Image (cartoon, rainbow, N blue to C red):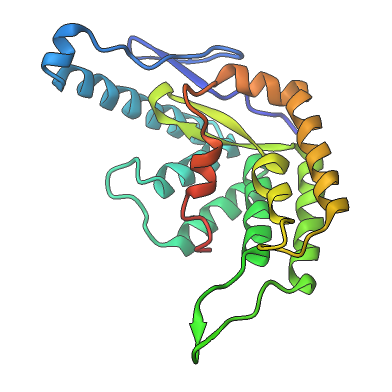
Length: 230
């Protein structure tokens, strides 16, 4: 399976698909700070170019474009975004079926999150039961299998018109075995911490990170996304 060489680098409005290139957000001049409109317009132009780049990937038949378009809609970075979580999930699932590894991994991540996240809603004055091992264990096994293809998935960094990798083990798994989300399991926690370290050293992860290194950590942001709605 041919892997896409996204991200997309944009210079002076030109759309270029290159391996290893990286953009930086425009730095506002003193005049821009006095009048934020020019800087705002440049930011809008970068977003518009990013959208066109993703649509171009779709036109080429690259399933990564389908996955990233789902993320653009989920992040509401397009006019008239699709707001129905079920439709967003279907878009990601369709991208996965067409061969997007990022989409396959994200689906596995969210299945595990759904199974492993305690449900704190009160029913009849009582807290709902915590996660069932019969549910989260198979989801974790599926996630482990998916992560063997690729230990990360990418999310857009709109200010830089690129997509940065999220380390699955570091961000989404090891933290669950803390005695609150899931029962403490030092063996599982240590195993996934090791997976996180291996992923950090993975040349593919490092290559993706070097292509799109955000100025601030997106990992905390990604955890904080309203992602448990599927």
